[in-house]
Image 1: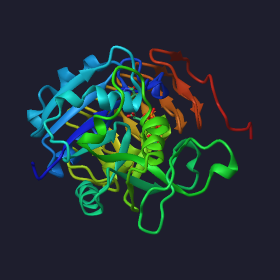
Image 2: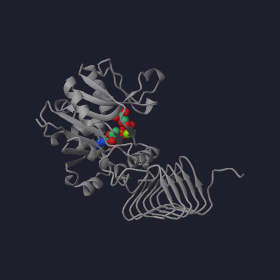
Image 3: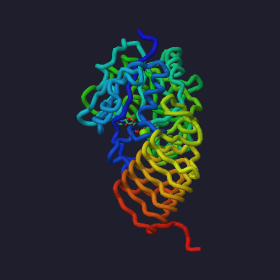
Image 4: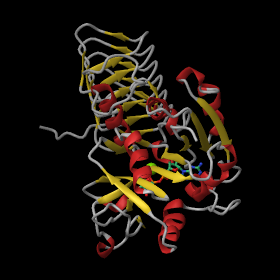
Length: 363
Ligand code: GDD
Ligand code: MG
């Protein structure tokens, strides 16, 4: 048995929620703090001693391998398995079982591919070993658990139920949610039915509990964010730059901003709040960018004011334009003197002429 487990990374969801931003780039490959988001998860797993990771993919899988290759640049051995039809989270795990080298009693780490977290991976494995559980789950506390899997535990941390996406107020029995990182005993993976879609959340976990299996929860207060929405993605990228979300893959020192090699930023432009500016991007005089992600080759013209927004690759934001909580798709052009606020999403390649949209009153 190896001292450090191997891991499965689930990156096969439909990933549609970052569209239209990501028509050209699937979500796990959108840069967060300067590198494709997936890099942070891979690098954190490596830092915890994981050496072998199988990527279970079903959607736009062909972009991962050309970028990450065999993983040696990250000190990893990476393998890729593509589902013909999406098999769901449990089906995806089962589908890669033949690539694992672990013995039946060895722990295997499994990660949802859209989570940014400061989870102490080694502590989760230790909890798993000491509790003797069949499966151990990282749990996080959130204010509104409805979009997640609810995981109540007893006084010893043993899981008593698993309620995926609770629908009624009565179902909201705890603020502890499934944080999307598990340790499975290898033998448990082999019990998941093969060759058909299986939801680990709706079928495997409830089924294991009903059969009396030992599922152990580890609740902590580490940084945790599901990057399922563009707004969360922008927040996560800024938190990586600020150092609030720990990752060994941030290319540079953490601080107020991250400017990648080959970007040009005018001396009197202001970058703050964890803003990242991609390679070949240009920020002109007097622009002010707070808590935002500016991808490669984008141009921010003079005096633009940008907050909590995502500016796609090759996009252009016109002079004096105000963006707050907006998502600008790759290669879209927003003319000067526009104002776009919370929730605005501009499709890739779209054109918005000068002075077309504003939200503020006429005063
Ligand atoms: N390979 C593969 N195939 N991966 C999949 C598939 C599939 O058919 N379906 C989903 N995934 C991957 C997604 O890419 C994502 O990384 C992960 O599995 C979870 O799927 P999501 O679609 O993002 O689920 P969710 O966010 O609604 O809920 C899940 O995550 C929550 C935490 O963020 C559940 O695990 C919840 O219980 C949990 O609280
Ligand atoms: Mg998710």
